[in-house]
Amino acid sequence: MSEMSKLFLPLEKLLESLTNSWGEPGLSGEVDEIHHSCSLIRDLLHQVLEHEERVRFISVSEGLEGLPNLLQDTIGSQIDKLRSIPNRLDEITLLAEDIENQENCDHSIEIKEIIEISLPPNWGKKISREMEKLEWILYPEEKEKSLIGKLSFFIIAVSFFASLLLF
Image: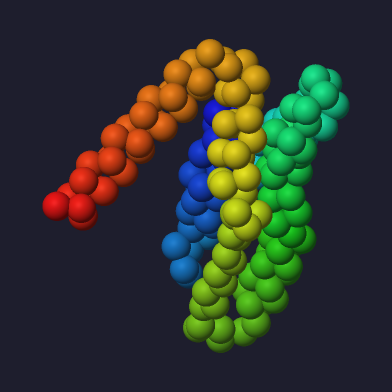
């Protein structure tokens, strides 16, 4: 899961770099910077694809399939949200050329694109549940001690409150 966060931490900065490379309204953008930002986004998407392949084709013991199943397509589904970037850039370029070709054009157009990166509903709870199962399988003695400790505390707490209610 740390690999997943490493994949998407740079995305915001890459998209910001792409936005800045287009320049301030009314000023020309930096073609080399636009190309560089797009190349970095392409490389990131390639890494996401490789991650998805590793998660999808991992082999785990019976009973442990829940965690890989939850991880599958979690990042890959975000690729679809980024898929529109090249086409939108082409549309914006054509629009900019049309505006530039108009005589006596003294207006600028501001274009905003919002790309929302999100996880499926209750994903965090489901991952926590699967991690808990994994801990029980990998460290059963420690989990039993922890459970016994929690039960002991619960019994003591209930006894204490019961004694307060009785007196």
